[in-house]
Length: 258
Image (tube, rainbow, N blue to C red):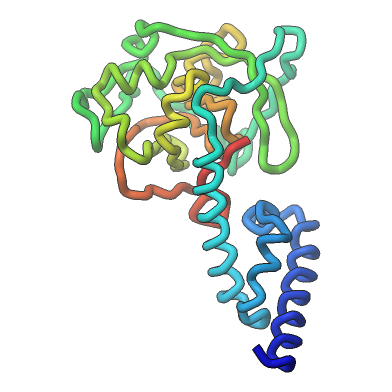
């Protein structure tokens, strides 16, 4: 590379890093992708056109997908998230959604059915009483939000691995997707789905799961950031085709490990 080109590339790289530093300080959800990258990774993007936002966005998305793969490789399916005593439960536990608390979805539990599709042998829908009849576990774990706060809560429900085996899900598949009554949707990797602390939460703090926390059922994963824990789940599907997600399609990391 000529001296002139080398200077130009270095200048572009410095400009991108300076811009990234400015953006990292901003609280916008849309900038989560930029915040999730290391500055070392950004410094490798010196071949991008710093004056072309689409070029930078494409490069950032590529690095984010690479980060997803690295997180997947590093994830230990046998390592447990920390648990806590009742005395450390955050009361009240914060409400968290992409809408206000006055807009919480009110689901009719009697009419609710959990729909199953994709790479699952037994696709019969499940009722709430049927889920409650399965083996239940309780955990007191920390919910970590991408916005910087955390809270400790007590969740009870069905180990997701037990349910997946019960319905004959293909546990060699890559993804499990979720569709929710509040129009939210997300997806997770199979290793996280089978993690012993991933549960289909039906209760909170010993009581029926309140609407604001996801009634009639949410997926609780202490190994994932909050936005990966879907509430008001209506449908589950198993697939080898990348499903994306509500926030993931807007720039959030897909793996979303905590």
